[in-house]
Structure formats: structure tokens, C-alpha cells
Image (cartoon, rainbow, N blue to C red; front, side, top):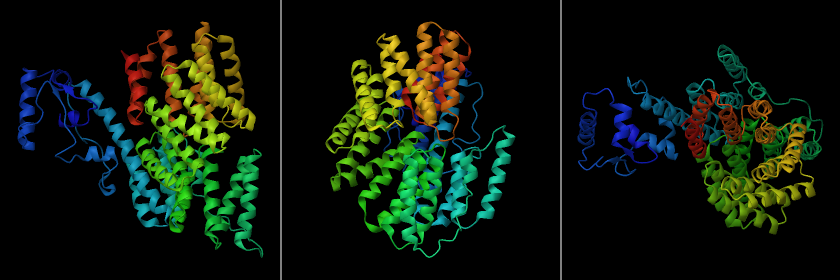
Length: 536
């Protein structure tokens, strides 16, 4: 009962506690009063837990779960399961809460262990990193992110043989559950390139490879560009030019995150290495740029507490240096993080300022990105006309800059706004364009968003079977990689529930329950509320 009250988002009524925990008691309210009195004696606080609505302020006592949620728990104390072994008979309401809270705290545990492993790894302290990453891998054997990080730490620590053995164990574990492992997990045991460099100095080779790799990615040859940048990083490691080394690592890390999907884990490790080097040189701008990219990775994965920590430090460094382009970028990620958690008023403020600062700093792509993400928060806040204007402005900038890589996002939000404004034909046209471009780019998130829009357009047409086909396709596309954007995945699931509800399908309730569980795990309170509405 203490845990139920301590971890509640709002005060819990006595009636709720009775319904969840004491329905089988002869005197349910009396049983509750006895337990509350016993808690007061144990905590030596006669004034605790009084009144019809019960809550515990985060003062005067230490609760490990509070510290874990806030990101202040000592990493050495993280591990295990919440209320391990506890099971209350004939209390389905409490069992449901306990299941969801275990998932949420397990996710927070993995987030904190991941952060604690990445920081020393970036600084070359592989022994500490190995111990922490190993605990994360053991805590969640079926979590690919945790397994990939442990494999990469083992390789960095010179234990490639052990990494290969662990990869085989992972493959067997996944196979027993009917799952396969991703290319990113297999690539984690990659060993450096030993090809001879000839007589050229490492710095010269690294600079040449950096240019070649960047040009290849800009030209659309992503795989070739990534491999060239990996070689550049190997050469830069043995060069004497530290700033070149940082630039190569930052370029490779950003490419792994943005130019290709499924390799965010490798990208995060490389960005941490770049950040450690930049800190040693006192290069605050490069540190802030790394933090911004790492925050972006965390937001997409639903690690909002970790993202907020990186955003705060990046914002402090960017403001101190007065770099408008960087300030615009950090504000944009801050707005994205707030929007994912349903704080759309805060998101609109950050994203509006980001777009303005980016415009003044002549950063059209950043301006387009901020306006596109702004369109989402305006729309979900009910400001359809403003959302449409932001999406249109983002689209114009993308087309002017020939930045197709981002274009499907504002196009999808434009389609959604047009559909809500009963401009059906225009919505169909732009949604089809977004889907075609997203498929050409091969981006799972954009494909899922555009297919979702087409599903809802079909639903609006009354074509339920077409809507079901589109939403099934959307779910398959946006979830086909491990490091998917969890907000987009949840948004597609929400539309699926909407379509199932129109069909009066019994599957709607089970999918709403799954969405609610995912919302709790990934800290998406807006989706938790939507899911509860559909369950009701």
C-alpha cells in the first residue's frame, strides 16, 4: 500500500485503495484504517496518510523508487525488480498497477544504467563501463539496446572473443522467444579495419575519408558513406589532431543517427567519445552539439529524463557561448521532448523561438525542422489553422532547400490538419505524396506517419477495410527496427484503436491496454489518458 500511494501521480482516495486491495476483507474500510495506522507507527509519523485522499510528499524520507524516477539513485544500487515476489490475491486492480509500474521502473533502470555505462566508455574507462553494461544486459535479456551496448563495451575492452560468445547466447535467447536479432546487434562485434595506410599520415587520410564519407551520404549513398566514415574514425584515432578526431566522430555519430536507422546505439557510443575529447579540449560548443544529438536519441527512445539532463547542459553551454544556430537546435530538441510528454504549451514556446532564432541565424533546415515539429503540438492542442500554417511553412523551406529527408513529416501533419478541416481531396493528395517520398527514403517513422494519415482518410471515406489495411501497414513499417521513434509508434497504435472501435472489434480494448502499458513505460502521459478513454 505504501508503494501504491508513494508512486501515484495524484492523491489516491481511500475508496480506490479499498477497491484495489481490500475487497475480500470482512471490513474493507477497517482493514484499510488498520494498515494506515501500522504504516504511521512504522514510519514514526502520526500525521502521515490522513484524510480522504492520501499522498506522500517527497520530503522527510528516502524512497529508492523516487530517486530512480528522478535520476538521482546511486547507479550501484540499480537492479532487481520492483516489489519482487509481491503478489496480492484477489486484487486485479492492484496487480494491473503493479505490472505497469514494474515496466516503468524497469525502463528507468535500463536508462540510468545505459547512461552510467556510456559516460566512462566515451572516456576510455572500459572496466567501469563493462560492469554497468553487463548488469543492464542481465536485467533485461530481451532488450536489444542493452545487449548491443554490452557487446560494444566488450569489443572496446579488447574482449572480442567474449563478445562473440555473448552474441551467440543472445541469438539463442531471442530464438527461444521466436525472435530474431537485428543487423545492429550483429554489427556490434565489428573489429577495426586493419588495411594498410601506405605512407600517408593518419591525419591526412582521416581528412580525406571524412570528406568522401560526407559527400557519399549527401549524395544518398548512405551505406558506403558510413563505412568510409568508420575508416576515417580509425585513422583519426591514431592522428595527433584532436579536433579532427572530434569532427570525424561527430560526423559519424550524427550519420548513424539520422542517415540510417537501426544504429542509434553505435551512434550514441561514438558521440560520447567525441564529447569526452571535446571536454578535454575545453571545446564547449562541440560538447553542446554532442549533447543535443544524444538528447535527440533519448527522446526518440522514450528516455525523457536522460534527454532533459542533456538538454539542460547543452542549453547552458550554448547560451554561454551565444551561438544562435546551436541555441536554435537545443530549443528544438527541448520542444520535441516536451511535446512527446504532452506538454504542448511548453513545446510551442520552445519550437516557436527555435524557428525564429534559426531564421535569424540563417539556418533554413533547422527552421524547417522546428516548424514541422511545431505543427504537431499546435494540432494536438486544437489549433488546426495554426498547425496548417506551420506545416506549410516547413514544407516550403524543405522544398526550397531540397531537403527531402524531412519533408514527409510536415506533409503528414498538413494532411491531418486538412482532413480535420474537411478538405478531404487536398488531404489525400498530400498524404499520398508523403507516403511515396517516405518509401523512397526508406524511413520507418515517416512511412508509418504517412500510412497512418491514409488510414484515417479511408476511415473518413467510410472504407473500413481500406483503413484497416493502411493501419496494419503503418504499424508494420514504423516498428520494423529496434530503435524506432516510440512516440510515432504509439501514435500509429492510437489510430489503430480508433479504427478498431469503429469496427466495434473486441481487439480495441486489448490494444488500448497495451498502449496504456507502453505509455507508462515510455513516459507518454498523453497516450496513457487516450488509452484509458478507449478502454472505458
